[in-house]
Amino acid sequence: MYRVNPLTYMVSSFLSTSLGNAPMHCADNEVLSFAAPAEKTCSDYMKDYLSTNPGYLLTVYSQVNNSCSFCAMGNTNEFLESLGIDFSTRWRDFGLLWVYIAVNTVGAVMFYRLFPVPRNKTAKNR
Image (tube, rainbow, N blue to C red; front, top):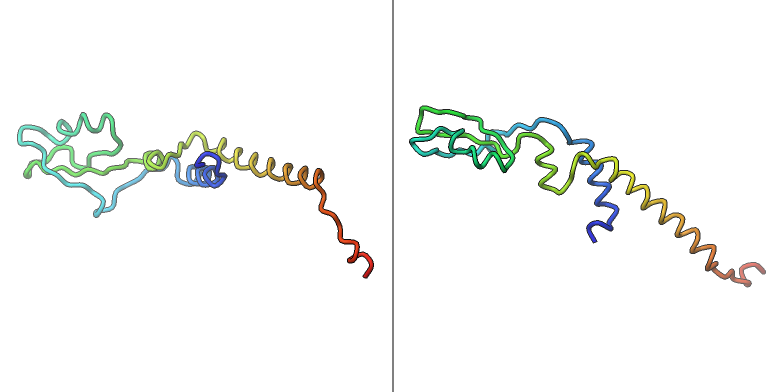
């Protein structure tokens, strides 16, 4: 039912148009802090993770306790992908919303023409 619902396409087109392709910076309370192993730098420790997941390191190399800071999202497209929205399909989604409106309007008019509502004869005599 998710793909049949027109609100899916409305929200998708509006969110991707308004939020897409913009930089994103973590607030202080969103930054993840952790300690890398003693023999590795932050970038060496997170290299495999960052190759398959979104985000970026705020601290690449730290002398103090090997502490690393990580932000889970680097741009708004990564956030949109977590919601199942793709920036490149924004116009398609907007078009599908209008197709839904047009098909339902034509269907309602055709249904009304094929099955007219009988008129009450007593209302005509008054």
